[in-house]
Length: 248
Image 1 (cartoon, one colour):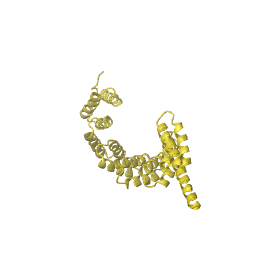
Image 2 (cartoon, rainbow, N blue to C red):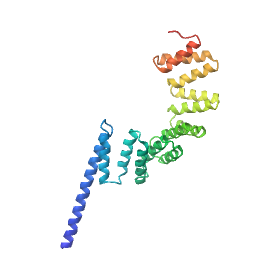
Image 3 (cartoon, rainbow, N blue to C red):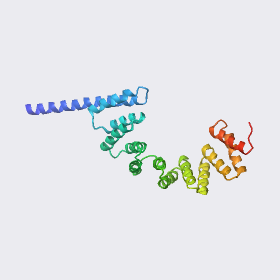
Image 4 (cartoon, one colour):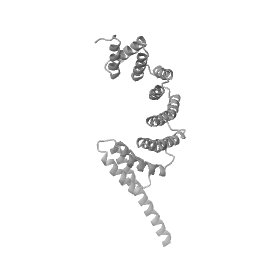
């Protein structure tokens, strides 16, 4: 009977300690999250580190610490904690996405693309179009235009209203001197968003460089009418002056 009583007492003590540790962990973790998006975010890292003392293998705390370091552009430290978070919870797509973005920022684009492909394997991840865009953008920055173009195309297939991929496709075709394809992409972008000034300005410049001054002037005037105080409007005005059509 004494052995049974001692065993039961030991179980209660263990359960009590576990509950106490869990409460302490939750307290520090939640406090860290509360500090993370304030001007006292340096307090967040202290709270997260305290939380890890109670649960050193908690993936979300490692991810939270990585988020802090990413916020302060300390990419190598963020990378370390993201790798640990993924090791502890390899099925979490948010961790893989953050890790991919960090790797891309560090210049390791090929490894980043592999991580993004893991995210794309998750059918429940909410924005595959953005993942394809990130892949294309990272490859574009390294001059790998063929592969970048493929991912930009996939991005707009998923979300045709997302304008940024169109602009990069335009730049790729322009760099290849495939002007018909470049202008077709701009027109697609403007069909989706007729008031997107960067695309309108590029279209106006294209017409100007092709000596199609009437068409160029029409586009430039539309830009000024849409947002007269914008940088695009200032550029449009300079082109109209070159054509002798604009006055103050």
